[in-house]
Length: 140
Image (tube, rainbow, N blue to C red; front, side):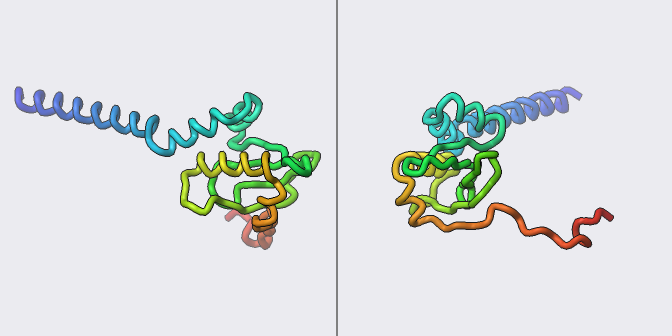
């Protein structure tokens, strides 16, 4: 009986240590650092919008159009109309592979400083998903 208690106590300590390590990595890993850097560059309004909705809006430097940057790395930029409805999707990313926070920061800076050059390189896409046939939409 004594041995099983000791083993259980050691096992509980090991689980607690593993959970502490996992928590540390989540808070200080590359993804978390990239998102912290992004948040430092966001205005208070953009930060609140990002926290509440998972995206933030920027104003283009040349046209004054509004762009909504969603969390992600590819196909995550939408041009929105006056009502806030998606109009056009834009796909542009840095040449190097980067984490989502870093990509979103690069997209923000690019649109706010040289919108015309970015859009000249970007791929357009429809922001609306194609409608599914009625049979697929029906719940079974």
